[in-house]
Amino acid sequence: MKIFFSKFLPRNVVSRINSSETDISFTVQSASIIITDVVIFSEYASSLSPQKIMGSLSTMFAAFDVRA
Image (cartoon, rainbow, N blue to C red; front, side):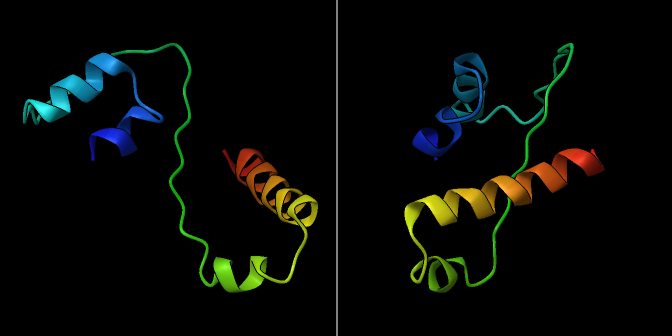
């Protein structure tokens, strides 16, 4: 899990998670975190070019931004 968390969390937070700390909170001015699982994404993406995949993902995340 350390590698997973280190991709999107600050290093000091990852260290606290790895130390089994359970109450981790702090204040930041502005942040957004989204973790999503696109159902059958691999099957969908297998028929598209990398450019089409990135375009589809950009459209999806732009829609998330509008809703935020």
